[in-house]
Each structure stands twice: as structure tokens, then as C-alpha cells.
Length: 172
Image 1: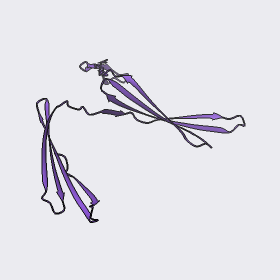
Image 2: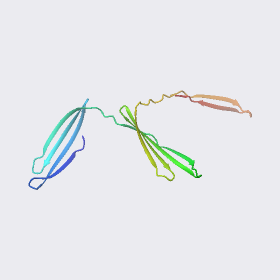
Image 3: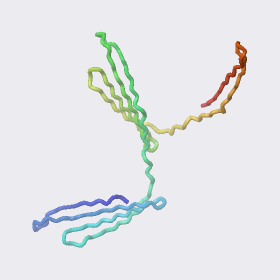
Image 4: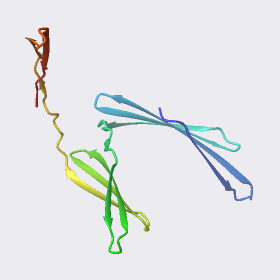
């Protein structure tokens, strides 16, 4: 059920009196299988008249809207230091933000790049690129059981010495 919407229309009648018309609209949406039932209840209230209510029921095919998948990568900051012709050190800071949105079978990649130089106003470039979307398959990682080896030896002063070696193998 969506929130009730109230519209007030004010007009002036032929005899010069102001008229007020209040229209209340309620929308109720129900999903039944692959169909969606939309019930619209509209009540019109006019000055000096009985409120008039209209109920409209409409069935439409329902296709579930998938939420847009948005992935924002961490901001990347690069600092480039160089020496100008007059021998002064120059600093250039480049900030890059990447936002990826999946829309159906396409992926929208937005790249926001801000370049800040010492005595200049920061310059921002925004590039939006649409590419076909292939779902990234996670790498399969196999972790083998840990192997522990204990090596006992006798040190130069005659005391027994234990050396423990643990080996873990992770295969990608």
C-alpha cells in the first residue's frame, strides 16, 4: 500500500465564489503469481456536495524488478612529484573513483578523475562507459591440510633442540 496522496484544487466559480476540490488517492498493489493487481481508490470532495468515491481494479502482468547492483571501488590516490624547468618541485595529485552499475546484461562504469596541481584549480573528468556484463566467477581456492614437521637435533652444548616446521599449501 502506497501512502495516500491528497491534492487540493482551488478554483473560482462563475458567480465569483472560491471553490475547493479535494482529491484523495490511495493505491494498493498486490502480487498474485505472475500478475499484479493494482487497486486505485479515489475520493473527490467538493464544497456543498457529497464525497464521491471511485474504485478501479486493474490487473497487469508482473515482472519482478531486480534492484540495480551498484559497486563502488575504493578511491585511488596517486601523487606525482616532478621538478619544473625553473627547478621548483611540482606536486600533482590524481584521485580516481570507479562506480560500477549493472543494468540487465550491460554494465555501466563511471570513472571520476580529479587532478589537483599546486597553483591550479582542481580539474574533474567524468567518463561513463557501457560494456557488456559478464558475471565474475570467484576464483576457486583450495587449501590443503597443514603439515607439521618436528626436527629434533642436539646442539653444540649437548642439549636437545626441537625445531617445528609448519607448512600450509593454498592452491588457486
